[in-house]
Amino acid sequence: PMGWLKCNVDVGVFSSHDSFSFGGVIRDSGGAFVAAKCQRFPGLFHPCDAEALAVREALSWMKILQLSKVILEIDCLNVYSTLITQTPNPNGFGLIIEDCQELVKLVREARFSFVRRSGNVAAHTIARVGGSMSGPGEWRFVPPPWLCPMLTIS
Image (cartoon, rainbow, N blue to C red; front, side, top):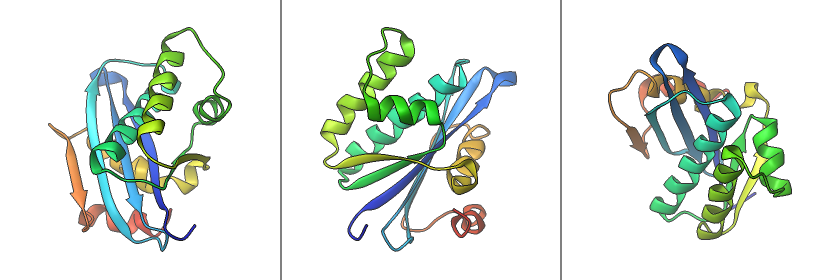
């Protein structure tokens, strides 16, 4: 919707390196690039846990950037369903979801949307790149050249 931002979120899992990487791409309501971020984290996680951790990272990033009216698009149906139904889970996955729900309260007007993987190409690309970077990467206003072709796809 007009006046809202969209943040595509994805994760890359690198079992050979015992790590995972978060990737997020923010665009305005007209589809113009606003920002992108990626970061690698140590540890092997179940893919759903890693996806939930990526959502938590994206929400934390939204809070730091002081953004509001953000729709977070994710391609993991299990994480999406759990976030919107807010069903309690007393395990590690549930605790990550609880963190996400607390961060949503701090990001004014944040919503979740499920998108097929084919609609999440830019976030997937930046998550994969994050796995090979030595530190976090963040771009504002101007996307990195290697991301530009993906921004027209998703």
